[in-house]
Structures are given as structure tokens and as C-alpha cells.
Length: 490
Image 1: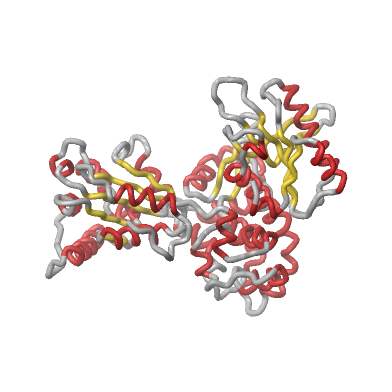
Image 2 (image 1 turned 30 degrees about the horizontal axis):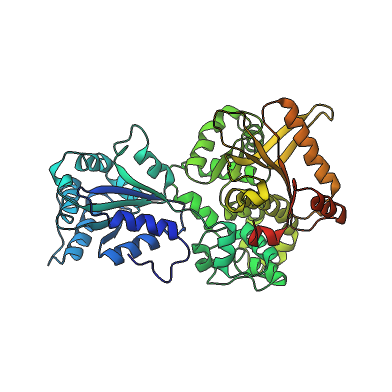
């Protein structure tokens, strides 16, 4: 399988697909491909089928009979039959799929698999029986069947215990969003500050560049105009995308509640109690909605690395955060003709505080996780990376730390590799350094972590004072990270 020349990144995902599809070992195998919508899963799988002359079928919403009929028509087209094949059941259809691999490896992709499961709930059990370890039809076949879907709650249940397909998949491939560096390259943005601003709006979802018809901001002075002519443009697919994503998830049966929960998180209510107050529900009533939104890929549950059982919730997709914080409160105005350009100036402060700042913190955590090494952290032996909170009893206040990096949990006393402060619009100085030093001292006093060699990371999109730069030059445990280093360095 040759990687298509028009495919951006996805080297790891393509290699996994190639290894699965071209496996010459006897016995049919099952693979599962998941990921949030608009990440390019279908593009990957269509390319794999083109490379291997495989069968690609995209399921549609429909009844059980209609869905089976459509698959029969696509199967007949693939094998060159003179007329559509009328399968009597999905058992017959799956046996026909296994039959394609009798002579050589045969790639078969069923995309939007959740639509078929909705129409034929017995299909996972049919596949479980068909891929039984000693079943002759499976052992005598080299079909490589790939099930793909964007409904993460449905796809997650396929392989969870005690689901029928638990233990049957030989490949479980997650297609993620592009990280902030790859997103900048994909959108063709040279300016680091502009790239970070754009990422706070559209994130790393590849399809959104097509939604914007390839329109990238042409410079920092064009950013406001770009927002108005793309995501705030009522005639652009980006305008209603966040609402469509919520409507397309089959398990979100109370869209009003789920939308309110997302809006609460986007505007700063990140604990369960704060979310409950914002939406007017008892705290106990939110366990299920939060779990469903996390399973569906809308929310991320981020544990406090310094305090047990104190998680916060973050929105996983920047465009959803942008919609709920910036657009939702004024959506009626934005739908009116000519109001986007008038409305945006009044929403810029909200964008900076509730979207851009939190997204910058997430970029900094991603940088620590993906792009740092021993030169920066003093080690490449990392475990969890996230945020943390330490209580300062003398000040009678909780000290929140934007970045916390721990060593691996290997049974020994765990190391505090680094703590960090991340500010988008603030020039960092000695007061920020002293705050991190104070946090490190407080963490050492608790006795839970080893702070030997802990690095103090200061992230700023604005800059650093001369005093702070001088302090960093004099000791290796102080690390200053600006936008250039975030995007270009380690």
C-alpha cells in the first residue's frame, strides 16, 4: 500500500492500516476504526480500499431490509455480478464477506457502522459468531473486515465487556484530531500567534478547512475578518457545525440538557458542582450526562494530578467551545443578515478569556506531552501530564497549576518532573516564577512526590521580563517557553 500523495500526515494510521490489510496470515480478522467526526477516517479507508482493490460500503440510515438491500447492491457491484445480490440475512452477507478472502487477503470496509447496528441490532452477535476462533469459514479466509463509525458511544460499546465483539478485534485504530503544530501546517499559517488564535477556533479537525473553502487567515490583521467570513458567516457550514455535531450523536437524547452542560463548561463551570449550579440541576443528576458527553467525545474528564477525586471537565473540540462561549449567547443576532461583523467586536473579550486562554493552556500541556525531552525536562521518562491544585494553608487559598508533569507510576516514590504556568496575554515575571517555586515547596511538604530536579515551566504568548530571563539564564530548572518554542522547539 503506497500512501496517497494528497494525504496530510496520518503516517502512523496509514501504517497500521497497511499492516492490517496486507497481513498474509491465514484466518479472517476484524478491525475497528473510530474517531470524532470530520477527522478524515473515511478518506483513509477509501484510500486503503483503492490500494487493495477492496470493498468499501458506506452505510446509510434506513430500515433493516433496506440496509441489507443496499449492501447487497454494493457487494454485487464489487464482484462484478450482473444484478444486485439479495441476501436473506446479515448472516448470509457476512459469510459472503468472508468468502472474498479465500484466495488472498481481501479488504472490506463498512463505514458508518452504527447506522447498521441501529437498523439490525443483532449484527454484532452475527459478527461474533462469524469470527469464532474455530469456525471453518473464518479460518479458511483472509478477509480483513474493518468497521468504522463516528458515533463514539456506539463504537465504544462494540468492544466493551460484555459486548459480543469483545476480544474479536485484531486492530483498534483511533484517528485523532491534528495537534496544534500539525494544524498550523495543514492550514498553511506561518505566524505562530495567528496559528494559536486560529487553533482556538477550529482546532485540528481537517474537514473544517474544506468547510471554510480553504480560506485561511492571511495575517494577524486578517484574523477578525476571517472569523466573521467563516465561522460566524451564517452561510458557511462552520456556522451550525457545533449544533449538528450534537444532533448527530444518537445517545444524546436530551439535546437541551447536553447543550446547557457544554455551555456551562465553555464559560468556566468546570467542576460537577459548578456545572450543576449553572444548569439548575442537582449534582447527582449530572453523572449520566457528563459520562455520555465524555463517551461521545465532547468532553474530557481531566483528573487533578495533585488531589485525588477532584476532576474538572474540559471541552474536547475547540469549535464546540467557541460556539458555546462566543456564539450561543448571541446566536439569534448572528443569524440576522449583516450582523456578524457588528457582533464579533463585542465578543472578542469573551473569546480571549473563555476560549483562547484555556486553549493555550491545553496547547502547553500537549507540547510537554509530545515535544519535550531531556534537554527541557531533565528526563524523557514521563507519566501523567495535566493540571493540578495545591492548597496553601498560609495564604488560605488553592493554588492552581496549569501544567503538571509526573514521572511514571512504577511503584517507587513518584517524581514531580515539572510544574508550569501558562498565560496568553500576560508578560511573565519574577512573581510568576516565585509562585511556581512556592508551589514546588508546598508539594514537597506534603511528602507525596519527589521534587528533586523539578523544572519550572513558564509559558507566555506575550513575553517575559528581563529579570525573569536573567533568572532563567542562571539556572537550568527555569524554562521559558514562548510561541516560537511551542511551535518550533523542544
